[in-house]
Length: 153
Length: 304
Image (spheres, each protein chain N blue to C red):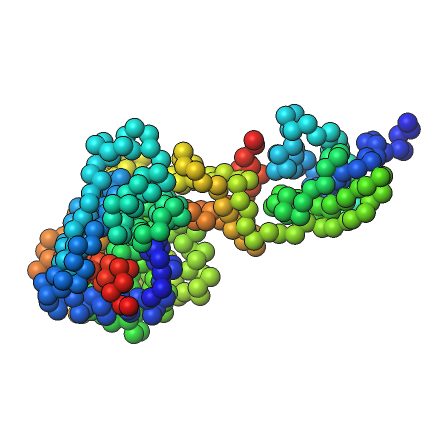
């Protein structure tokens, strides 16, 4: 394989998430619940030169088509991401991420006095604002470093 | 008013507020005349933190309406001590009572608890979050003394952690009050509250000194600055001292300024103000009974 070929080979079936801001790929995997235990075959390219973003990350998840709900959550940390659904080596669907109205169970509340940080049978719920997220329980607003609050399963 | 639970002042419209205050005024006219209104109704008290006023005034309110309380008691003496979740506790106590009052140290606790019960649940204070029944009695006191029209109010003290302030500030957007917030820089309104006030298009100003606005105010709402918010005693004393008022301070105020405080106070309002016409904080505390009677009456179906 020459230097001009793709660093990561094409996948037969699955999802390619492109145009992730450089350095955010591992957070994307955390949001998608992809880890060693999930059994998915995953390829990650990080800090790939990009005209649009300077550098970008790319994530390929084989054998799995991500739902719209799953990818919408990505908008919090990768607003420019594009989602490519691949079947038999062809891109059959391509779409941008869209900001969801709320995010359930993916993020933890940074307010240590919030009821969701205790041992209660409740998922975290955040409203998505124009420039951040807000806990529906304690109303704390988070604008910076949202990725730091991803609950890694 | 059409709410299953009372969680936050934010859920209350102007019409909701007026409905509660009007009903409260009826009850206040003769509090002892309503003993058959909700005969045998039981109010479950779940206080995970100490409370004097809120707990006693809810107890007085339900008893004035002919009902009674079932009280969880202190956390130390309850099953919470054994590690029971709040979600489980409220589901159990719901079976013992017709309505619940919850005070809990965690923010968002009342909202979460309300998702697990059908009986009306009233937030009696959730950490530094909301305290809507305090807000309603504050509004009652403001309406009684200064009225809601063309109202200018100053709110002073610990604006960061004071939950009564957060609830009140939001509720005052319903009556288009001009709100002045006076506090040390370190105890400014939290971002989430300022966000809400801006979203509501509220008229707010923030100040570090009372002098700059005192003469404009119809109401001055004073809150306590707590020692534990400061790293050391000397810093606390220096800051707290700047937010204390006495009769000399009020010489620059309007003659009919109403001074309020959610109580307990320490030394932020000097005792020499108590005997003046400005002092309304004891009346404010007393208003907790008719206002909570009104809220319970509405939630228990008194308006149907």
